[in-house]
Image (cartoon, rainbow, N blue to C red; front, side, top):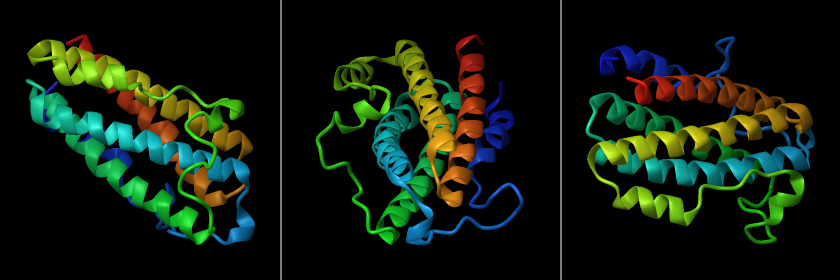
Length: 185
């Protein structure tokens, strides 16, 4: 698939508004969120940090233009999303990270993060092997985002955070399909 054909699909999740055209607000009143919303945003911020690291590698090192375009779209989308999530947590006077160490969210059904060993192996890979490793790792990474979004949709209270979770679920599901297509090309 040509990069030009991929770009509109990848950037579909990059818009700054809701499906009905309303802009997404940066802050939601404090009364309209619960612990599930806070957990979702904290987990997604950490998840986005890893995604941005992997996408940065792919944008520089992937041999195919299609994968570099994908990585560039991911970087643009996830940078904007991370800024929005940080703004929500600050508006709610909530911490950006859980206060109980890395395993804090495990009791809430959190999915395992992409490990340092996996990212280290990705950093060492070259050429086509790098691209396959990136796509496989990022498919799993985005699957985790879909699962976290599903949990937020079921347990969250903030209308804005839930609308964001719906967008994450839909856009990451589409990205996974695109990456599977790239792997099978």
